Amino acid sequence: MQVKEILRVKGSRLLSIEPGGRAVDAVTTMAEQNLGSLVVLDQGRMAGMLTFHELLGALAKAGGALGDLRVKEIMVANPVTAGPDMEVNDLRRTMLETGARYLPVMQDGKLLGVISFRDVAKAVLEEQDFENKMLKGYIKNWPA
Image 1 (tube, rainbow, N blue to C red):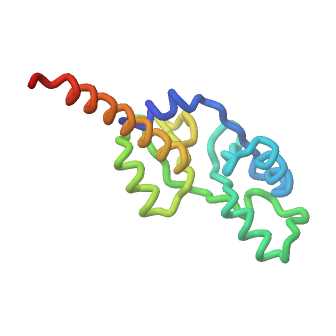
Image 2 (image 1 turned 180 degrees about the vertical axis):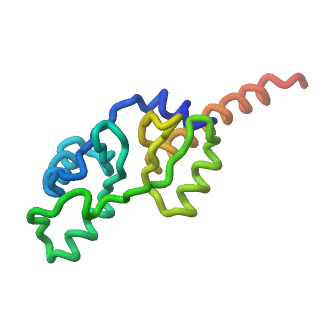
């Protein structure tokens, strides 16, 4: 299975924020939309990623208040990315090795979507369920 197949099933919904946006607005958007990350776009180009991890770190550092903290101050500026033709096992390995829970999917400088660790787990589980059903059907119909 490839990353583009996960994106096809997941859909292309992307929410973003600008680098100069307020971190508190990012928290509001993420909470309202049930998201763990936002793509940071600067004039239509990906400038970074903002995840709940960076927001929690900023909250801890500031004693629980984000105040006027800007996204550019806490975002991951050069996030690890995936390509649409990347195999899921390579994607999982990359996510585990880098600790990234969310990876932007890029092709020729264009952002195609964001894959979360949850998206990967769901896709692998569905693929395994399908293979198990096929194998059970094959075994059940095996000539005696």
